[in-house]
Length: 446
Image (cartoon, rainbow, N blue to C red; front, top):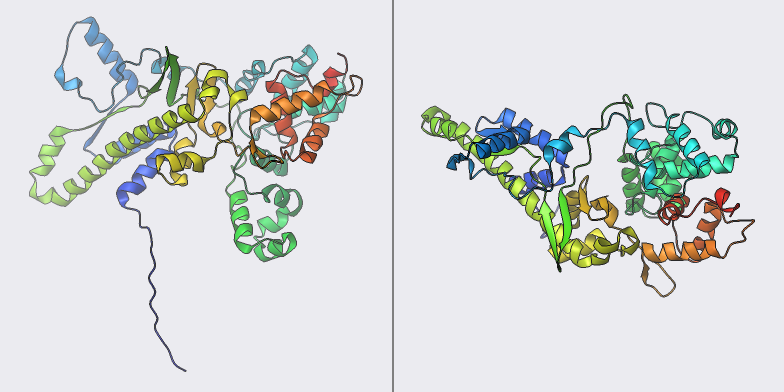
């Protein structure tokens, strides 16, 4: 037996500690970043963190007293020229409960009849601590003196509300709703959950690969995706929910688009010069001083890099989706994370981190960054159809239906599917509501 040693060149990307922390900070939402800043300050004596509300109150008092102190003019995190965004008001504007949070989303949907509102309210009030529906739709139908199809149509609407997964009737449906709302979900994820959730739980990769005639790599990727879906909501559903705080505002000023980063609600981070001098001059603390200073600078640089990335992301979105900023979701064009990543010369995972849990404020509403990315749908000619086109087609189908036998959302889904437009029934219901078109149950009376 002969043993031979062979060498081959291999390129590996090793992330520096600086890049790792920058990526970590980039993926944090506003609330998560605020907590992260306080955690780092607790660990590092060189960091001084001032609550944003305290800083604002101090500046207001100094302004009233016509007093200026240069020491406060070079803070790392200021709130200059941010008159349109009041962080104190936003911080105090917390939702009383999940129930209230859900009820406040109802007026966003137009053309709801009084019976629709009654059913929707009843469904919201019938959620358990997981925000799962805790009542049978037949009971709701009897209680509201209507039929099951009517209740299911309103339940479909409720399941498009935030947080994702609300109104699920079981764990399987909870997972399917998450997949329906994710434009980047693996193709087989829904089928795995609908028919083979047990095999997924058992991580039977080879068995799934054989059954679905797909590669082990794709099966493993899909199983891992399912395993990483959001867990069931736990705890008291009446806990307070913080108000959504958009990281970026975009508004039209004359012929120009103005992009503003909302940084005033984040704590102010500085380095304590007193501790720096004390540790720097202590020969016994050289290593400790070096490590803590490095950690402090990484935090400041990471926050600054996060700001730059969010600004560049917003700038590209304005360039690519100008119609959206003018008209709203109906004008949104198909756009992938990769499209933006290529333009900014960044990895797609960096863009994914940048959009996670973050919101953008426009003249017609506040949107999750992630909701602006859609794969679109491939039509016969090989082009990507936008949401606007799909909505237009939906409207055409509904306008051409028999008035006494209106098309249900499920029938509309099948028709679109036959035309090559693969979207879920929940998405059809969502688009129909956004166009202010009533459910089939209500259209029959028109």
